[in-house]
Image 1: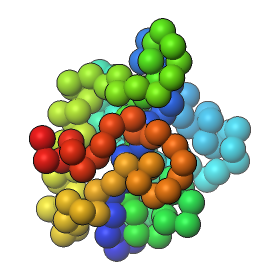
Image 2: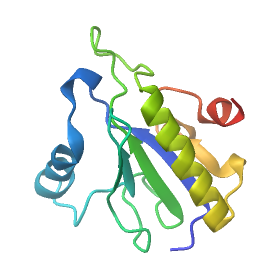
Image 3: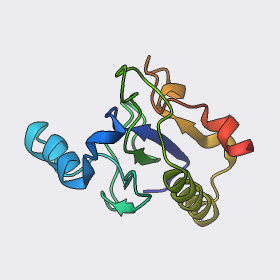
Length: 138
């Protein structure tokens, strides 16, 4: 894979559920029948960066835009009380996200304009529940 994009996602779960990588693998592999987790990285609420799908394989995270796109998923994204989309991420998650995005941008020459949220691909979703471009500038 020759990545040109990085896309940030959320698991669309409540943070109090602490789903983890095993849950994600169950969903993607056993329930959806995919060969692996669709994202390349998954960041749990404790800020742990979990490698998932190898970077030499296309992801399965943005319909029609996977061939040159690295997928990073943040655990959470739903308000604990209302269940509606919300920026529920911990500072540890945002720090880990910043570190991996910086690393990937430097490694593959991906500029800021090509770091997107899932919602930026016209997916009619709130995912990842924050403006990725604004976050990059912050």
